[in-house]
Image 1: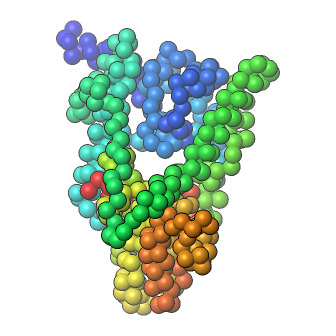
Image 2: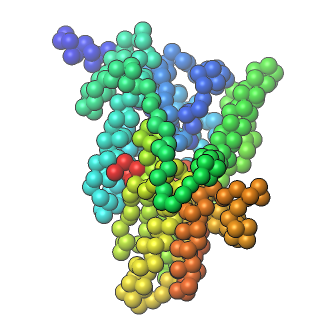
Image 3: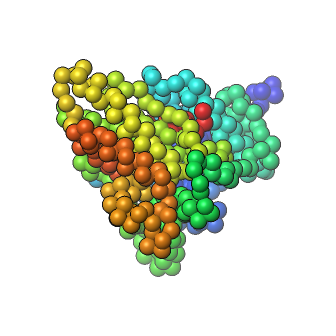
Length: 415
């Protein structure tokens, strides 16, 4: 047997399994061990795992155990009535080397340089992830052979262990035009943390409930493992991201003869120290937008400026579209998954204006200039007879417009 054939035979017993609606990003090894024990997972046949992104987990599983492993995880959440949103399921279509290919195919007008930047970024992340798995599988020659072969099949190199370490860049110092004092800069930082705080709190509470209920179940030994995990899912804190298709259909606005719909998103990539904006117009006359955020780089600011750019684009484009269609689109829907940005407009902006854009402690509102620009952009359309609605939609809920805008925002941060 040749050396190549020997390597192939050694690695042939394993395969990648991708499971949707599993958030592995903040699960510690100890917590994961508890979960596997509670589910009676054969840890000898699940070699390693990794978080690919929000609610997508990657596993290296022995081929003769794949069906059982998928069955166990899929039983964690009752599939009905939350089909495809709450239930954990295997994603057969996920392509690790080109995860954005299906979305890019929907956007013929997406700039080529943005596509190339996304592909390079995805492949670099894949090389780091699989190389990290390789080193974490020390002592398991068959698993390491499988991972090395997978890298080679995708024309990727095995990185050094040092290269697999994540190197996050700190936010660069603000270079916004005009003066900025230290208090306002600290307010920006606080605003960024607020954007994710609700989601982080939900996930922390979910993990706490998972561990607590698992320990209780093991002590009592009165129920089967699957019943425990199912109850964990059903008793966790309500979350807009786990909704049935019927609920989502009620939330998502559809373009019509009277309303125009656009999705705006912002993204910050810590490893690049860069933020970008992405805008997806649900109208073939308008090409998608993706570009790097100017000035201070933060997620919160990118979310706000994505809305600003969308509204500014529509201010000039809607009259042209209306003349071409021979009809008027009086309603403009700007959809965003940022509660921070949406609530800033719908809940707090009037109060901020009355207070002179100061907090109750007399400090400048975080991202004040950005919100003022957003208010002006809304006002321009409103003054021309359009009814502007800033609409929140849950993230990571399978809403196509959100997913497209999210990808565009990441591309914007990379170009």
